Image 1: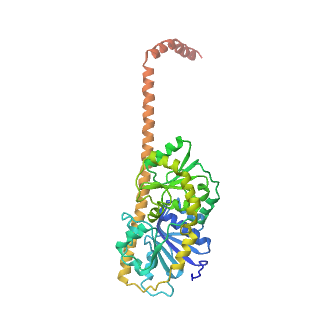
Image 2 (image 1 turned 90 degrees about the horizontal axis):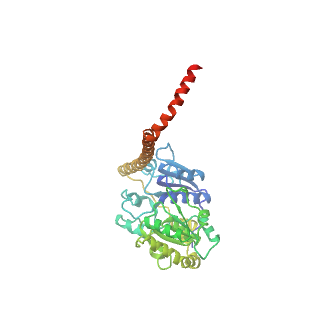
Image 3 (image 1 turned 135 degrees about the vertical axis):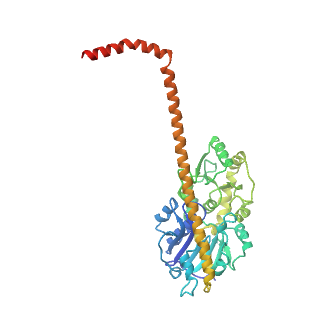
Length: 419
């Protein structure tokens, strides 16, 4: 029998290494905080870097965000749950683990990447997760497998990047049996996708791009997706489409299987719909597949997939976590161990803060470079005008004109003296 639970009045601390852009774990944090708040929980978000544009979305929802640079005062006893991303834990709370507390929160750890070049997604602090975790979650089988070499905690399960409930509204959209409008959702669309876009546009399909560096860079909503017949994307946006029965073509910088279908669904799911481990395609192949396969993709989403979407809905996913998680007895940790953990956490703080400052410096350099190039273009334009001026001024036509005007100029001077 399932245990009953209510999160109303419960207090969550969600930790996140950086909040700035609308990507990856930031969107997971935002949507998790929004959902928990909507069902009556109290939420605090802790991060190393808190900056626009993403910070504004948290502020708009009334979600308190604290950065490691802020003055803050809270205790482990203030929280019922601590939901940890990238082993980001406030150093102040680590000190409290040295002693037995009257009340301890339930710790939940989430891992969202399989890549070694994103080391903070792995258990990079030795044994900390094992000592604290009541439940460790992984976004896909691929991510779970990549963490096995570090040794897995005792209790693990999946949290498949679930979609907010608003995306169920996509099922109410007007459905067309011919493809008219397509949306590319990507912060890094590869050349073959841009090539495919040009082909589709020439074939009469309207194709928009949504992502970083575009005019419409903000969290993706159901209202935006409702305007389209299909989406080209990878990762989290795929779950939006699954929940909304919106045909999705999976392809980006890792390649991809193309239209999500019965034949590729299982393997794509194991790799978090990232496009791995499928092959690369040309722009021509992508465009042709989109045109030829739309109706079959639509039928798959409407007839087959819509019956099996629970694990991709945030209410079901959170409910499953709460059913499975059990408080763990956390014993006081040795002073020397905690001090070494704090040092490691401090290094991570410095790394994230420094990388953000370096990113800002690079952006300023890029902006200045563009200004310099603009000035150079203006100088070049002025030089061209100057060259043309002297060519005209020294021309035979100008000399003839000067001779014609000389009597006129002499008469003006004479009249001026008389007056």
